[in-house]
Every structure is written in C-alpha cells, then in structure tokens.
Length: 384
Ligand code: NDP
Ligand code: MG
Image (tube, rainbow, N blue to C red):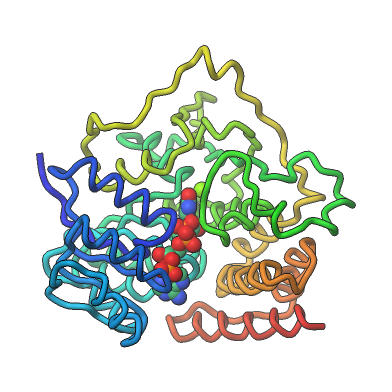
C-alpha cells in the first residue's frame, strides 16, 4: 500500500470536488499536498481546511487576502498568478498532479510538472487537444506517465492494460448524445442556455456541459485519445450510448471488444488514476444489472452535429489545427453562455476559424500564437 501525494489544480471545480471526496474517502492512499482555485475562494478555503494541503495557489493578491481570512490553519505557502500554478505543479513533495482546470490554462503547469518529475492525472482534455504531441513527448522524455481521468479515456486505458496495442483495430468512444440527441436539427437555433446546460447523465462544469450538447466534447476526446494512445484518428470511432454506463470500448483485430462500465460518477476514473495500478475497495456503488434493464447504442447524427467531423478534420490536418479548433470553441462557448450568439453559431464559428487559420506546432510559442489568433478571429465572428 502506498500513499500518493497529489497536487490538485482546479480544486474548486466539478472534477476538483470529486477528487477531494476521493481523497477524504481514501486517506491512506491519497494525500492532497497542494490545491488551486480561481474565483471561488470560499470553496477553496473549505476544502483546504478539511484536507490541509501544504501549499495553495490563487490568481492574485486580492484572492490571497480573501483566502487567508477564511483559512483556519497556516499553509507553508500561497502562490499567486500563472507562475504560481507552475510553482504549485512542481512542488517538491508531490508525486502526481491532477490537472482539472477548465480550458488550456492547465498546459504550462502540466509541462512544468512533467519536467519536475511528476506523473499527471489528466482531466483537462484541452491540454492534449492544444499540444498533445508536445505534452506526450515531454512525458516520454522525463519517463513520466499521463493517467487519463476523462471517463472515456480512463475506460480505454483500463481495457488496454497489459495488451499488445498492435492487436487493436479501433477505439470506440461512447457519447451520451447530450440534451439534444433526438431533437430535430432546425429546432437547435432556438436552444436556450438553460436547455443546453441540462445534461442528461453527468453533472459537470458549464464549459464541458455545453461541449457535450454540441458534441465538441466528443470531438475533443477523439483528439485526446489520438495522443494518449498513439492511435491514428481514422481508427477512433464514436457511438451514442444515452445511459452513460459503458464508458468506452476497445475493438481488437479478431473482432472481440472489451468495454469498461460503471455508474456515471467521476469518482470512478479519478480514484483509478490516483491509485493506479492498484484497485482499492472504496465507497463507490457497484452496478445493479437487473435495475439497468437495457443499454442502447446509436449512430451519431453527423449532419446535425458537425463537431465530430470538424474535430476529425483538425486532427487530420495536424500542425496547430487542433489548437485552433479548441481555442475557437472556447470563445464560441463563452459567447453562447453570455447570451450573445445562438447555439448553432458555435459550430459555424469553429468551422470558419478552422478554415481561415493555419499555423504550425513547431514549439510552444507557435502553438500559443495560433491559439491567440484563433481566439481573436472567433471573437470577431461572434460579434459580426
Ligand atoms: P469547472 O468549471 O467545474 O471547474 C474548473 C476549475 O478550473 C475550477 O477549479 C476553476 O476555479 C478553475 N479555473 C477556471 N479558470 C481558470 C483559470 N483561468 N486559471 C486557473 N484555474 C481556473 O470544470 P470541470 O471540473 O467540469 O472540468 C475541468 C476539466 O476537466 C475540463 O477540462 C473538462 O473538460 C474536464 N473534464 C470534466 C469532467 C466532469 O465531469 N466535470 C469529465 C471529464 C473531463 P474557480 O471555480 O475557483 O473559479
Ligand atoms: Mg469524457
């Protein structure tokens, strides 16, 4: 039995909160040594007072002052700013960093953690979509692992364990289909923020919930899988599975398929990533098969939800195309959430930005430049 010392980036979010629960339930296995929050200082203080991490990171001095008034213990250090996240991710006593910051804000801390010799438990798929090649190469160079927390990738990781990847024919990602799975396409123009935020099976942060409604979440996950498992994008398929019980599957060359199943509760993949390679008898509920009744599978409606084809195109183009797709999507989702654009504009804006922007992935600066340019174009389009 080994205790893992974990830094938790994004402790105040949906994944962060589930990770805190896992740590509280398994105190002999997981010790949270560092935590970050962004806007929600009351929640950061609450979790910090319970789990007493040595170090914390917040965006600025004002947040630090607010946090200090709420803490009932004295941490060794409170870091501030983007550099603070990098320092937190490289904190000496940590073995592993769980990256659960929404968007690409997790990229620099992820690279810093790998360079400091930490393993990564990765929830922030945007990090691999933006810079998958670079992140995986950095992990290899430092002999570190990236353990997937995203439920689909955690499922595939479990199905692949101990197998020869040459025997894999394809990876099959399951998707709930989101709240508009069976809506007529023409009704999607009138979708409200509230309707889009009502996910049928998962309770998550706002950005990923909108991504699940457009199916960009699955598009981003195809690209994430391409890098995590080093599989060509043409061998990654998507099937709609509304119950979210089968989290993904691996089909082998002989036609056999392995699937991983559990309730749709992110504590399953989080616990597995934090305690891997062990399986810990925890507090998570097993499936009751007779109550489940049936599991359904359907073909995605590619024409109504163009996000899957756009993601495939971006992956095939290579270079900075996936970073561009991701950046344009982040801006478009924020514009939709702010009530400034209609729901289908998210696809239209991403498609237009992807068409008009090139860029290489030569190094981090080139990727950041492509990301910045794509954000600018997407903002202009959202306002036109
Ligand atoms: P949330 O919106 O619930 O949480 C986001 C976290 O990131 C919060 O801790 C937030 O802090 C912090 N944060 C936001 N902006 C910044 C920033 N600019 N710099 C530093 N920290 C920031 O998101 P989720 O937990 O739902 O998702 C997190 C990541 O995990 C996403 O990449 C998502 O795609 C991925 N994921 C999530 C799943 C889920 O079930 N929720 C499933 C699979 C993947 P604060 O709240 O204090 O402002
Ligand atoms: Mg997922």
